[in-house]
Image (tube, rainbow, N blue to C red; front, top):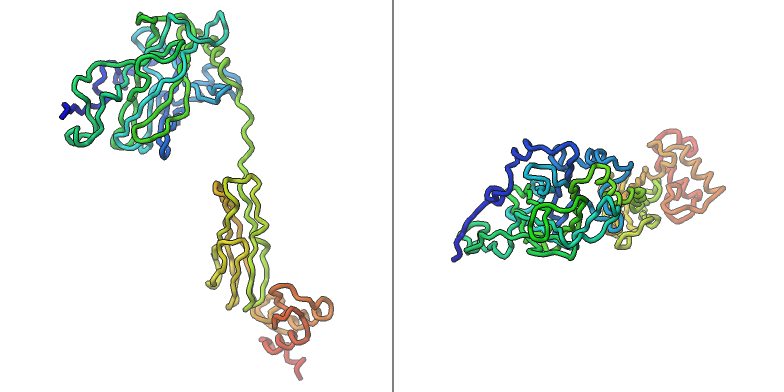
Length: 429
């Protein structure tokens, strides 16, 4: 069995200063950096500007303001929309050609415990100088070395082989590996482990970037340098979207801003607000007791169609319980057997977003046409007036007591028979 050595990536890297030391050796005023915040999203890794309030490397607004960028300008590369993380080779002690920024961090529960996070180097090293005022592939005599990652080939994650530890290392795996960004592409190890998430699913690690010649001598031409990365995981099959890291190597703040502005566009107008499906459950209605009532959500619409056609789901939220026939259709029905108010909620969905609406059906006692809770001569008068002027009943018309589709004298007599006040009786002498 291989020799198993459990180690914390944060405590066994002599090249990584402890966090209090990093804070003590604070950057000069002109130095800036943004950490890369990472998290898992299902089967994919995600990377974005650090969102943790108060954390070092997370103040995007102050950083943008410090670079004197135009209003509404963010460090986002205009051609691809990829994020640009900012760093400066002068921001910590160790000389003008080395920086541990940007770091990689994940807040609690954003990763799985013991999840191994890797970086993947892609693309070419790009270079911007004040003289040229434009981006081009870096000259052949300069490179950026990324150190501190762990070669995935040396890591064992088999629980049994590691003697019960979450992971361990193959024998003889002490030799450090590097990634080299050059104007011709990536050299060395293109993909390396950044760190493992702790038991709370969080991580905060800084690696080391070095500006050096092609033969490893520290230093390089003054200018801005751009590298491209992704983050991956041993527990997720999809890498993050690519992102850039922009290094300042001796430029003034104004020139560094100019190099950045060559990459970014002003923030485009915000996208139009997302248009949600519009549920339409129909107008509230007064309906006749003991008559089948049809609900109708077919006027619902989806102004910004989603991946699926609209689906319908009705739910009763108020009133005597009823059986809703066809609750998953646009036009369900129910039979009110008791007086009261029946309210139904309609939810429509296009597979991406929902919309909601409600409708209420008031069911008075049979013969209570004016909805005052009594049946009297006023109700009878309303029935007889409709019988003489507009006898054709609408669906569930409360004046059509016998439900035959016509409002007539017979409906008035049925109401008279149900009178609840003495005011009806003078008409029955």
